[in-house]
Image 1: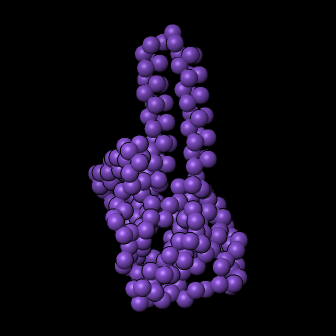
Image 2 (image 1 turned 120 degrees about the horizontal axis):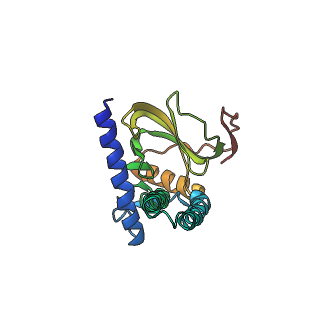
Image 3 (image 1 turned 180 degrees about the vertical axis):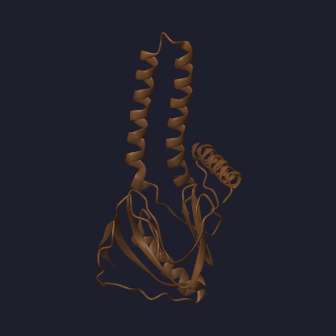
Length: 223
């Protein structure tokens, strides 16, 4: 990928989280049409994000006091600190305003403003509750994508046919299994299975099967 393309995609990402901030204040969600089911996932990271925001605000105040006698430096640091706080809040705002969406024929998974995966319901072979805690260093691979929130995923979707996922900087990958998080994961699984039945898919309700721990994380329970 060229540097220009990468910069363009990063600029688009910046615009998305900034738009999300405005929509968050207005209490509006993005891409959720009437009849669609929104599957929220921001709750798992809320405490961490708000805690980090508080620390940054305290740091901003402290730096402002220390640099009170240096107006030029103080102004620069104030801009940097305010932008940092907005970026952190934008991270949460993007997750709140851009939930996963279950439509009549598609499961639309989103990772805040960073990336998204659209899965036609007809390609879903199985869906199950599958709580996993994954290390931050864990990487996707072998056709598996993990949309982690707060270091965890709670729903696993296996596909009968692969889909293509595009990362933030444009790298494309073929996906056969997707693990994502939902705040109410069991309800999300039930809703997805019901929608599959309505659509004539009928994903197998896999329950009780043990799963071996993976590198960087492990399965906790499944149902």
